[in-house]
Amino acid sequence: MNFDIIHIEETDSTNRWLKECHKGVDPIVAWAEYQTAGKGCGSNSWESERGKNLTFSLLIHPEEIPANEQFRITEITSVALCETLERYLDEKSGIKWPNDIYVGDKKICGMLIENQLQGSKIKSCIIGIGLNVNQQQFLSDAPNPVSILQLTGKETDRKELLSRFLSAFEEAYYRKTISSAYRERLFRRGKESGYRDDTGDFTATLTDVTPDGRLVLQDTNGQERFYAFKEVQFII
Image 1 (cartoon, rainbow, N blue to C red):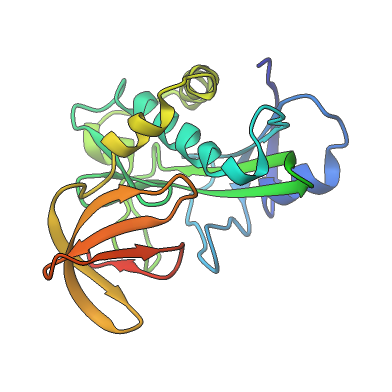
Image 2: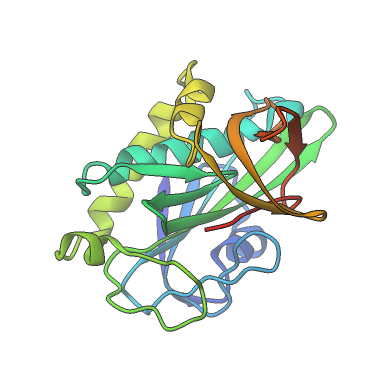
């Protein structure tokens, strides 16, 4: 993949910018110094100080990936982010299902993936990423953010970090073992932990993620529970 990088001073959302302002078909990255309405999954917002972090979106046309295997894009992006971060951090990062990147119990990165489907194919895919890099203090009510600066005490060259991620993304995109790499990095995998669904709080062990992206938990009664996105919460 040969990504063109467009550097934007300010926009409401790099995902929206790519949808409405870019009409080409080549792989492209829109990187904004500041987003006025950065979005996470669902109704979540993303706090990012101007010029301190990486807030960007990728537009790709993943013709090799069938629509019924679109969760593979989540796997590819999540693994690439973890592998990139490990070049900067002493502590290993993990994937909090489905696609938040954690270091310990703190969130360092989130993403929003929007696929446009056409029959059995993915016509286009926009991957929006917010990665905490050089922000020293977080002021929103987000419960557990952390940045590379807070973890290392050093500022990071954001342009170099973006370049390394794009290289890692391309390598992960063609990796045949990407699903197993994703599962090996799952936050809390194999550990008994607290969760919450529409019936209340419970304790379970995270055992797997299905190929279509559902979380598999085994509760203390030995029963397997399957959850789609937003059907269960991690109690942090």
